[in-house]
Amino acid sequence: MANDDLNARISELDHSLTSIEAVADLDRLRAEIAELEAQVAAPDLWDDQDNAQRVTSQLSAKQGEVDRIVNLRSRLEDATVMLELADEENDADARADVTRDVEKLGSDIEALEVRTLLSGDYDPRDALVTIRSEAGGVDAADFAEMLMRMYLRWADRHGYSTEIYDTSYAEEAGLKSATFAVKAPFAYGTLSVEQGTHRLVRISPFDNQGRRQTSFAGVEVLPVTEETDHIDIPEADLRIDVFRSSGPGGQSVNTTDSAVRITHLPSGIVVSCQNEKSQLQNKAAALRVLQSRLLERARQEREQEMNALKGDGGNSWGAQMRSYVMNPYQMVKDLRTEYEVGNPEAVFDGEIDGFIDAGIRWRKTTQTGQ
Image: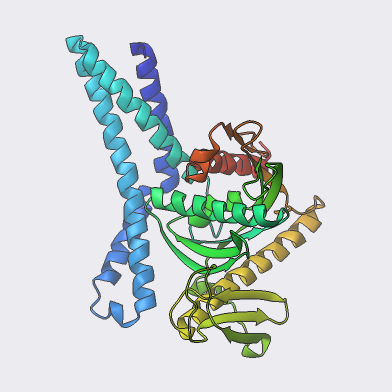
């Protein structure tokens, strides 16, 4: 990169980072951190473990956000100084080092810039992801399991913790459905653009004639509920069934009725959890999933009412949103953003940040009409 281009790029990144600092409002964040630190220092904090975990999680998330921005500013200032020194000494190697640093800075600042587009009420929350096999028989069930692994690998790459609530295995292979939580700041806002119908085209490993098969799986992403949501669910509206947890084919089956299935009678919503050891834990987890679904239902109803007033109809999350093609060519393409890559294997191994970033930008553009 020529010197003038490098200076121009540093100036461009400085402008982007200044915008991020303004949106993040570092002074406000530091004030909130000080308040949370005071709560953490209280001797009775852990008397209420749920509240203690919420406070410490918020503190960690906000401190991480400030540290990330401050670190980027420091790196940008260092790059500016190093470029000046390289110019003074006419050091080509030092200039090459600065070029590499600036390229990495560019990708890091761009990733943080996408985060500033997440301004929805529920965007900062943890995400509750449900994957269901749809049309395509055993290939669809296998595809659902591939998608679950993809999201878990993505979370692992970023150091995000996950918790699997329920897995319903298909008879031959793969999953009928699975529900898991991704616990990270802005997990819901980030993953919500993944919601919709995913399509896989490949030579079926389950077809002894080696024919090409198209299969579908649905992804649902909900915000995890919090105490402030005040979702009142009368006991009379629930039917609670218990059953024995089970795994795929050769795995052992529990000898106690620890798995829990909850039916919300007014809406017909059914949730289950079988991954905890005790019936009480499974019931609590299932109730959390139910609350998230009811919260999303209420949000959609409000959105439909607003859309009806605007006269522009509602949004359908059931629409096909991404194709994964493994035969006759190799490509993964988002049908909304046109973003595509030619390496499905890497995508299934969790490399989906490009799709997510493009989806967030596309959604923001769609919402603002720009």
